[in-house]
Image (tube, rainbow, N blue to C red; front, side):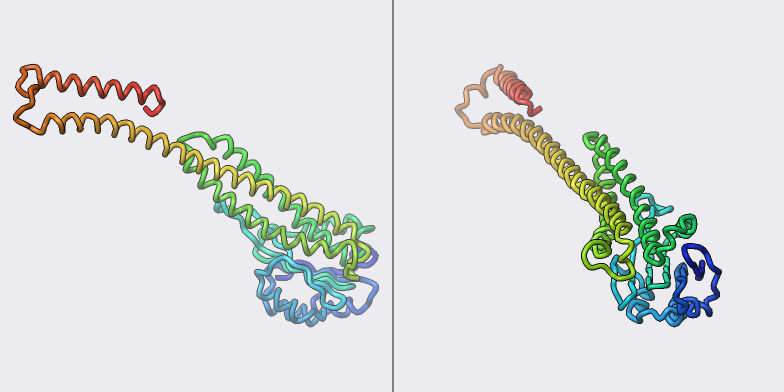
Length: 324
């Protein structure tokens, strides 16, 4: 669906452009056209391909969707894929991953937002408020789009850090161990989903500043370096979250092993006590003819007393040793 189709000249809005007239404005050379689509289908992309002269392989990738973050050069144009990551409104333990496909040329920008509930209208409004920056052309628009998407990663990462701190506060609460491990694995999935959006983009954005950069971005390298720095910060945060989750899981497993050891010690102590009683009962239950204590009137209570005394003695020893 077409959201906007606007031509800009010297950093200011020139006109709203009908789709059929896009190629005319692109051919002028003294302005650039910025088109925004939402969930554009193959038919809309085919029309845009004809108007902008887009490379067929880039259009094919945009039509299929589900691309990993990347930046590809096609002659003097770029095809950029940036992942959007949003909290699911239905399940707080899940993230909704979409993407923004951006085609950038010397005098045009075409963005196609897919599977994302948050629009990018604020990006256009910001760019129009800064005509001295918008004057740089399509490169600044690409930066503004990427910067807006990357900035939305920060609240997700901050929320994961806050949730992890809450889990750590309850990690030693016996009754919350099962709930903690479930939350830790859910948090690990979220961190992995965000990392899949950040890591490939971090490598790709590195190509837009320093060294050889595409001609369309040559005059805006410092802006893309800023995006690269933001991605580095998020990547470091995700590394920290991942390490903390791994440590928390190991602590949980260690606590389970300790609890199992305590239970096993108690079972072993009681088994030893009853084993002694069984041994005494087995000896006195053999019924040999010449067993003096069997003929004594005090034999039965004496046997019970010996068994009880032995059990009490063993119980106190195990108790002192910390097994009971």
